[in-house]
Image (cartoon, rainbow, N blue to C red; front, side, top):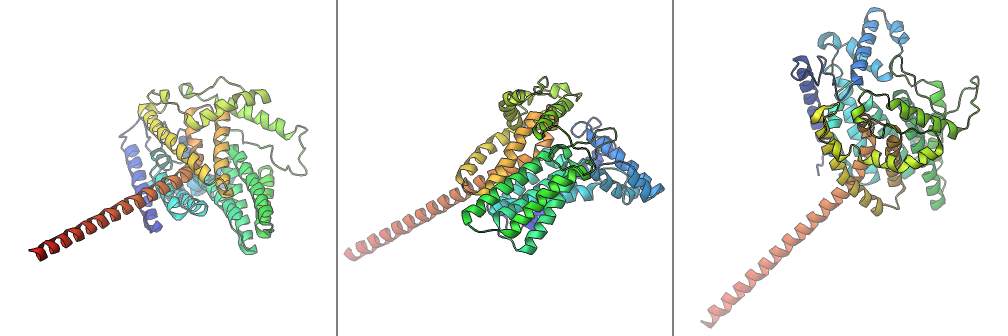
Length: 457
């Protein structure tokens, strides 16, 4: 395994820049007009990137012509505002395209790889972290999506970095200074994730809740109060409950921003008389119905199912787990859908690889069943995947939203793969040494036989 992570990070950056340049040239010269537009934006695999590119361009023009106040007055997602800053500066030379957005996209991509490495190293070992980062770095559809003007890479970076902060709180005994810094960083990351992907806020609630439970279990087992760790995770939890009601998770103009029942409303705001469970159930049904409105009906999975009651959810839960983990199913791999035949084949190949990686994840869970930090990673990935199968109807949307959970599974699978490689390396080394030892003994015996024969002669 490589001993210099920085060198391989630079190589990954060079690969990403090269791919982005290729995507831009393919769009600029219309080499693949049905796949990329003139800006290098994906027309089939990243449909919303077209709207984000147009909004970022509008923001950049407002900033250049009317100033900062007009730029702030436009309602826009956080990632579009960041892209617009690049459009307003280097975009004057390169234009408003994926090549201009590359500095941010490259930062997100390399940040994800760093989080993968540090998560693997913190939970398992450095070899696992490096192997997992390499797998993610060359995962074809993820790398291709990371060249686009979409919020996915930024959101994945925030969630993985938050999970890393929670893992540190769960695994280490931090000083007060380190604990406060980790808590502040975790709160900031959670807030940014809400602003980027408020419709997946339940994942943050799940991760923080699990961390609190597992940290309390560690304190009880060790019979030692980890004051800094506990204060940090409680601070993150408070920010998690307060931020959604104070900040808006802004989407595209005309799209209703997401809300969450798991938030503390301001004092001036009228409190809902509904219970939290009732509001959560209603949101599940509404979000599932919202995904059913996509035009690409040929990519829908169980699109006719509606969830209105607790019984509906419980009955659909096993099927939701199958959809979340295994979709798109093999029969869909060779069908020509909205992404084209090539897109279906690529998604099918990646899903097939994940089928085998799930087996390695199962082995990892069994071997590390006494480690609480492993359970945090596994439960967030598992429950998040099932939740996507419960809500998301469109296979293409499911594929993109599931990347962050696949990355968590890849970290766990990489640990088993690395251990297997080490095991076979040791066996091969032992066999080689044994063979060499047998050869030396045989040569010595032949030499002694020759000496005896010479003496007798």
